[in-house]
Image (cartoon, rainbow, N blue to C red; front, side, top):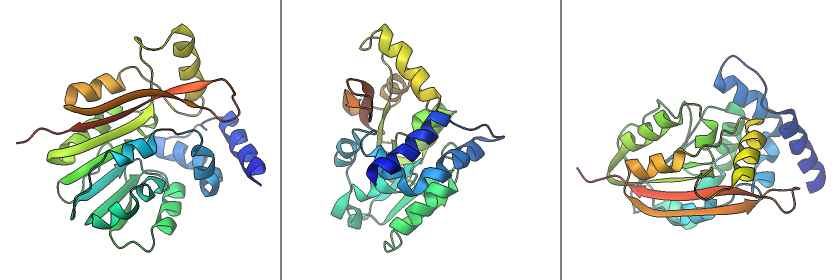
Length: 234
């Protein structure tokens, strides 16, 4: 069963990101056929999410936002800590993925699912924690998404991010040539600028740079980072 499901997802990935008028339409056309089985395959591809979530503080009464939250799987990684939050919002542009998130969190009164653009959407008030999990590489205007995330944070609030990336200092010519071309086929745009931009904009609490295995590509490991920063006090 797992192999058959993986085969369908790999076939979708090989077809690549479809053309469409808007970014939202491209996401829906790409993810709708695989939404129901999205998480199983990506548990083995998207590394570092547990490390990120474990480093994000959740005080009692906290307000949390995940930008580009998709199916809502990452909120489950908070475990019992999620019960402390007064409100947690999952924001994404893709209706098919958000439908999975609504089903997944239907019993949690403090979880809210929002169909909106991560570059412009704002919560009703400042939040304690905002994070991206493999979303920045999918957002064409990633700087606008980062700035929007910082703007919605309270002074002293925490911003987290985990994603694929490139580093001119850490990765050789082969990696810098292979991974951008490989991921761009599916609308994932690796950049050497994301992590330096985050470190420039926020004081860094933690920054990890690692590699993770890619399903069905033995011997290859894609580079990713885990970043946690804190917005300065007013």
